[in-house]
Length: 189
Image (cartoon, one colour):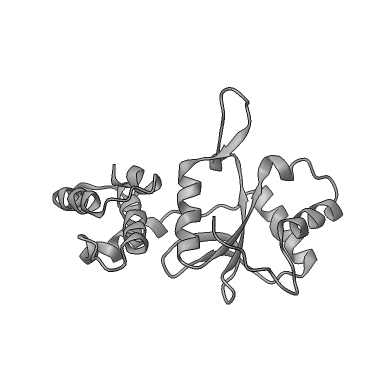
């Protein structure tokens, strides 16, 4: 439950303290998914209220370990975006993991810039207009990464699928702001 409220950017620290305190008695029975959610809640708490101590701070390593236990399996789409970045000459690490344990599809850690190839699991389709919008988990991860100082360029699968040639894909990445000479600083939204 704490994860859902963190995703929605709930602004009451006392609420998270109460939930964390209540969760403490169940920690030994939690699975990796539940512990992973507490890792993200702890990051949200740290970024939202840096002056406060997270109630379960003695378990942070356990939470991060559970979060990082998920095995990453890059998709063909993700490999295609990485190949286009290579052709552009944008130096990056594939499947970079931040110090906080967050995974980025392609990242340049020294400048804290990343490209995320967002497949179908990152979106929901609106019932009326039938358009794709980012789901709450993806919005939450973006907010955490920006709070940690990362600049993120997102490449949605449904836009990438429309591109045919390598040249079109490279042009799309340049239009999104990928550059080998500079990447303009963007204000987080």
